[in-house]
Length: 303
Image (cartoon, rainbow, N blue to C red; front, side, top):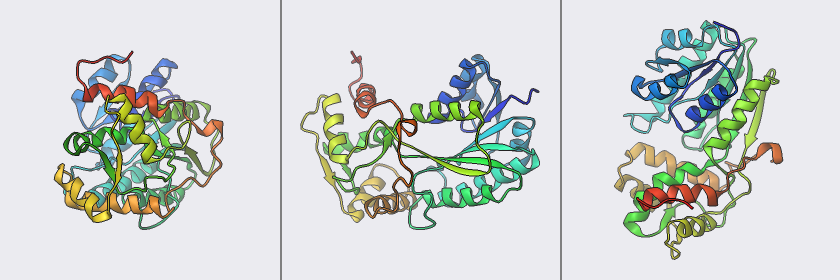
């Protein structure tokens, strides 16, 4: 196997599948790694070598990584796990050990803004720990990509919007957030992988075209969904946790999500680098919401 092969974890996820497809378009050899072999078939048909298995199995991951020029690593969300934090910790440890076993020299690690903080950031604190562990691996060049608030998070809020008639979270309504589309994140990571200019341990923060508040997001989403009266309602932390549980989120996950929202409000989760044009994607929230609205109004097509 050529050393120019890239191993991509989470290949069927939001970022992973865009990343695999972009690398294939650039005539790169790609190993698409995921848990569900059926979901990987589409990428196989496009030319990727697929590896399906248990992401907590060191031998499986080490074999998938072996001989690759670089690895794109990520910790699965684990929202459906009985204990999300335990699952994510185990996945992180497996990734680290597989990197060492496979003698990988370059890794781009998907992290998040706020990962510089060690505590009280909900699920992001595991990303902080993972960054620290990767930094300790001898002779590893690792770039921690820290994107902002995923625009795709709004898709998970549609059931609540349909039920209540408004967009509701516990994030401050007037807090500017660096929202970004996952496709843009994937395109940037592909660029960084191909260039392979990162050495040692470094951080790259990434955002969308401009910062947006939740109040602005509600207006944009409402217009796209033909619901011009859609408003953003800022919930208390207790109300937000209850609302998440009511739409099916596990109790411990809802608690972590509320902790993350509180960290946003308190400024613990925010960019630490200057967000230049190189640190921004091109997809606007208006463009993203136009596509998202199709799931709210089935049968309609974007113009």
